Length: 321
Ligand code: SF4
Ligand code: SF4
Ligand code: SF4
Image (cartoon, rainbow, N blue to C red; front, top):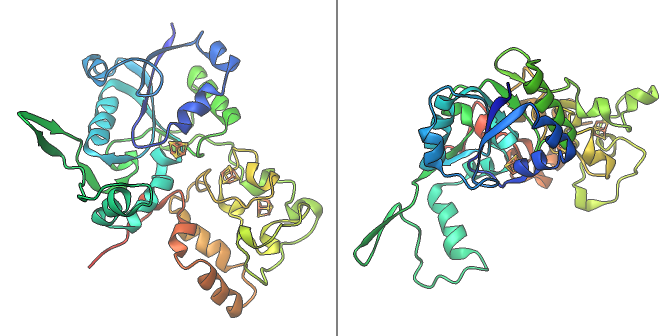
């Protein structure tokens, strides 16, 4: 009997949905074993009330992509938990908060002001900011309430499995689907990953060439030069996070001469990506001058260290007085 699968996108961009569609004919093969009962709001014309009406625990697997940004996201994630036997946090937004999680460095009011008043493309002379409830003549209009900060889905519900990537690479998605279909899943609470770091799958790894890693003598940001395509980016001063990132993407970024920024998520059992990152980077800087350079070149270092995982960190937001 086919496994029932539901897919829900909450506060994300739809890229993770695209990664599933990118499976192309593999998705068609998988559909012999899967019955997709819900895929919203991107793919199927189903309504949230359709999900709410399904019997509890009637869906075998629920994939959730995107993070929790508002009350509607929060509600739907809870409904998914009620309806699905297994929940997978699919993609780094769902698992750790993702890029939208960098909003946790700012107050809600500051975000609204930038989005609705200050942004160059906005024409809003009256400074109107969306409100959860507003009156339009005799009608009352409602919008989901914006939460104070971004949360990964396991801040709201119990999560069975995690998948990294922004979005997950389609080859990795195929492995995730296979694991789901065959029931060959790791212990509850695990990341579904090949267990390798990006460095392990990167052709530039000095260890593969019998060399040891060089200390960083000068910190460089990606726009400050064109890296040598043969050499390790880290050795050239570009702060590649490949050593501490899950390599299920096959090392996509170094392949195109760009540093890994960590979208695959931390190598288990680490959860706090930024702490692991600063410890790894700190251990490879040649001296104090290079440390000063790092601080100058990355004035908001938190956004580099936690580009994909701030809401999932131990200290998950900037604390304002
Ligand atoms: S993980 Fe990336 S691709 Fe997926 S929803 Fe978030 S931002 Fe989009
Ligand atoms: S640090 Fe980056 S460039 Fe160097 S081996 Fe690891 S992934 Fe490749
Ligand atoms: S190399 Fe790093 S940032 Fe690039 S896709 Fe892979 S995990 Fe993501």
